[in-house]
Image 1 (cartoon, one colour):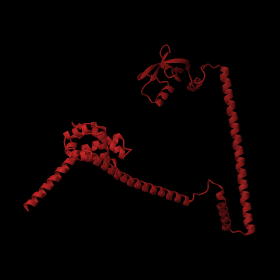
Image 2 (cartoon, rainbow, N blue to C red):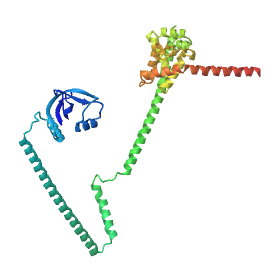
Image 3 (cartoon, one colour):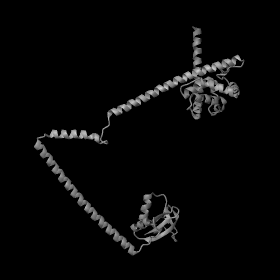
Image 4 (cartoon, rainbow, N blue to C red):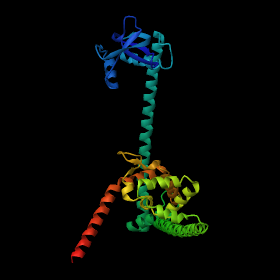
Length: 360
């Protein structure tokens, strides 16, 4: 037998076996570690829960329902009404209404089947009469069979443009779309090339302006920007790094350094960073730094020189993000050891060749 209850923690109505209740019917067992299908099967078969369950607070709505089907019906009814009590008269009325509805549905289905058979018979009869009429016409006018088929094909071709859904797509339209796409891509490539050429011209103009301004500064007795950075760069020691750091505390010198590094140039972000870092630091100094100071190295990104690098790169490449710039600079610094080995090996090779020349 089953009871109709409402789980208070979920406010949901359900039917469960009577043997899941406690003595006061205020709490019921709920199985744990079971799939939904297994839980339903346990409820349908009224199995006792001896383990893997928990007690849940419930509100009892109806007890001791002997029929599983009746328990399901009352559970469905309880979703939209709180009164689950029904009299025998109501049950009889419900049964009579269901029986009457079933009889009416059966009668209507029989009527539909009869009407459908009649329609099929009429369609078959009309089809046979049309075939006989068309055969008589061909015999009367002595039309060959192939002429009749050709006439049907011509009629279908002439009538097809009237229906928009059956109109085939024009191959020429697809070719036009492909040609248009090619033209757009061609123009895009041309524009990118022209933009690069304009950027090169702008760099030349900026370089000339920088040369002119630094030349005037030299005539006034002050060290020019070009001569100052030419003497300091590339930085060859930690003392040189400290000297440049103190110099660029002045905002004007900081801007001059950023512009000087901007003129180094580069087509891509990685190439731009490589050219700037090569201009700034020799490998013996760059090997002492890392991006944020890992592996007991000095943090390069905390220097003001790095901020000047950021300004120069963003002026050259406006879409470059701070994260990408920092990552690329850190990658360059991490490769300083291999770069230094390459320089040492090349210098050793040149010394060996000089010694061979002297022996000769």
